[in-house]
Length: 82
Image (cartoon, rainbow, N blue to C red; front, side, top):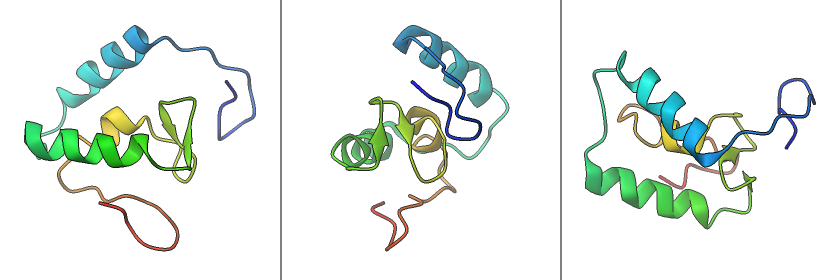
């Protein structure tokens, strides 16, 4: 996989992503509930802009992280999908 920001080859396992997300969410307070989180992830998984099944091509975020933040919106250019 290639990093959106710098075009460097990056290989990240699903387990590594889960660990990163868990660690970063410790610093967040405004989290989406589990139902909303799952709805957002389903929309991301069906989006043509999802890269490598993990990354949003518009913002470069791991979708598992962005979808868990209640105050975030989908960055799709023609309108947020969630």
